[in-house]
Image (tube, rainbow over all chains, first blue to last red; front, top):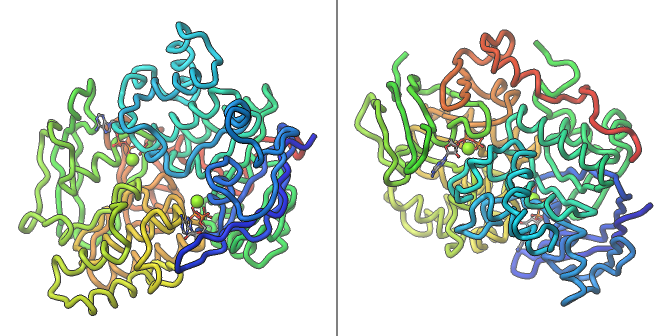
Length: 259
Length: 258
Ligand SMILES: Nc1ncnc2c1ncn2[C@@H]1O[C@H](COP(=O)(O)OP(=O)(O)OP(=O)(O)O)[C@@H](O)[C@H]1O
Ligand SMILES: Nc1ncnc2c1ncn2[C@@H]1O[C@H](COP(=O)(O)OP(=O)(O)OP(=O)(O)O)[C@@H](O)[C@H]1O
Ligand SMILES: [Mg+2]
Ligand SMILES: [Mg+2]
């Protein structure tokens, strides 16, 4: 069943550089599916994520999410529907209230979406932090004093708190070491199996994107240039760009590390 | 080999913290080398970067010592720093050009026009498209990976002896990453720069660095030549880190269809 269907999204940033960040982008994501999104730095991935999350307005195009005319929603209707799509930002430092604590940020997400009665919130927030591998002692710490990877994990805990239907993950595991990352990826895959969550998984690490995605879309200069099943696409890339990306992967991530 | 700096039993405890973020760390940074630091999230990598750059928050308790072989370096001039969060390197109220021109003119005797031309050249070196126009733009008008590269351009502007780069390529696609790695290599080779390169990507550490240091739980668990450390890690934690690394042949975590 199609969960998200975006058609003809376009966005040009005004100003002297007039960058066409989205140029007729269409994509769909099924319920319970992970679509990986890769492409060179500056090709428009975060812009697409922000448009889907209603944080930026496209110049053209339409989006249906869960049967709703997503871009037409506003006011109370949007507030009500927002829970369905959550996002983890590429720059988690900027995505928190300056004085927020780790536990407070997660509890707040539970409060806004009225999911857990007030007295159960601290416990629920601590459980979410544990799920992303953070010790509950971190709950009282200001987010600003956490390490980069700890902060990224608080952002993930906060985004899964409202049990969304679609989670947009913008480079959400790119500051995590391999062992912590493995744990977070396992969590994402488990939540998907249990709750039918769908992901738009933006990343630059092809090995990671391949491991978690059902399908992968390749973006270049504001356009999606190819889409296909993850494994098939990477073993038989159609575009020169994807071939070059695969060839530039550092040795240890290759199939045949040159010793 | 001459050392540029030595950490001698360095212990760092943030204000109010129950445990030190770095404990008893002894490590020599050789002049001209490329040293990669890898390790678990929260293990103290950024703390080491801040300690070397003299940028620990006030109230942080420090014991042990960092000894410099020459006169203590001047931040911004002798040490360039790229922070893990590029937002922290760039002031939202200054254009990209203002950042770079200021970064160039503070230490170097340059006229405004000359500094501007150099600034554009720096942006070109980190592969920012349309450098001339980019000078007039604001930090928030760039993508995450572009902001990282602007932060790198700013950090190398004054020709530092030591560049401390904290996850400076973590948001870059592999093609741009390879260009940045080539640039850093060139700066070390031609200008004698020393590089402390913090990364979670142990494969990248292996390609770029001469030596790799592994941190775990505030401690240095292993340090050695990059090739040896990757091929024959001695410590269980390093082995675990290498084993958890995904490659293009790893078992996938999901099926072919939802
Ligand atoms: N607010 C803005 N104003 C003007 N231009 C912008 C703005 N935000 C992004 N851009 C430009 O739009 C293009 C796409 O940016 P976007 O952040 O979507 O890229 P990205 O694919 O996420 O890149 P990265 O991998 O580096 O994060 C870039 O060229 C960027 O410079
Ligand atoms: N200002 C601070 N106050 C209190 N504790 C801090 C502060 N900054 C960092 N810490 C703690 O010190 C420890 C080491 O943090 P550091 O940022 O050095 O880790 P890191 O190795 O860089 O991790 P990451 O890979 O996640 O960025 C962490 O447990 C962190 O929560
Ligand atoms: Mg981005
Ligand atoms: Mg760090």
